[in-house]
Image 1 (tube, rainbow, N blue to C red):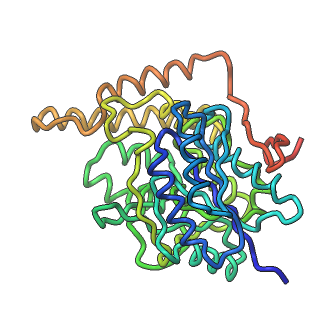
Image 2: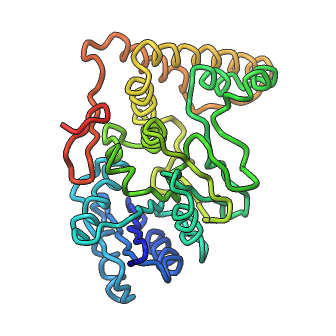
Image 3: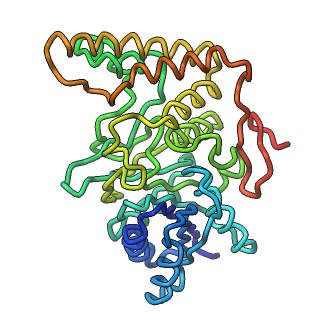
Length: 340
């Protein structure tokens, strides 16, 4: 009986040196595990692909391959490309698990092994995620509840009495002290049971960036699978290196697009509209309080205006609901959980 196999996918966007560091950490963490590592360059067009290809050849990593996606369709599309490529390469021996690793995330020696061990021993777990820590040693929040109307209001208003009242609706969970089931998991270090993807499909490529792993986890949960935070699996994660979100003064339009698409696709137009209205109401209260207290804005520049304009455009759009772009691992479209 063969040992279970793991396909590791690392997506690069114009951070080739860091991506190679992540790959090096993954090679060490994959020691003793049957599988391979695919580095996907998401059409960086800056020489990243050639640099990484040549570096991998010099390192003589037989289990590592560098691929070029040919287009930058976003986080989900890039990872989907790597997953499909891995399945095509290993047609006679499809991997049992897919491990998604960010290019700015560095697994500790046994981080992947702990995820694999948990998945092997707990068949109800569809996705398993790691504890991630920053390069300053501080733990990151990577376990969450799913967004709701209440969480949109609580997250925007930033007001103690409201947060206490809605404490069971807050999206970001405190970092768990031990392994446990959660709502959804961040995608920086995420192991997925291949059979789950066979059932629910890959990432929805309508998301360019953000909310795609939330959506994927929700589809898995609705299909009856558990999301598990594995405390023993530790990964150092810098965060927002490729996206530049830490340095952006204004929230990019794709964040608003992804947020709206998540609510539309999973809850419908009325719910999505209500979520935006509640976020704007809470955010307006928070901003007024900051002005009265002479505090700087806690949100990016023009955030509330941008959200209002984006929401109004969506409400009055005649295009209706955006169709899902969910496909199974072979690329065949899946709509509402049924293969077409």
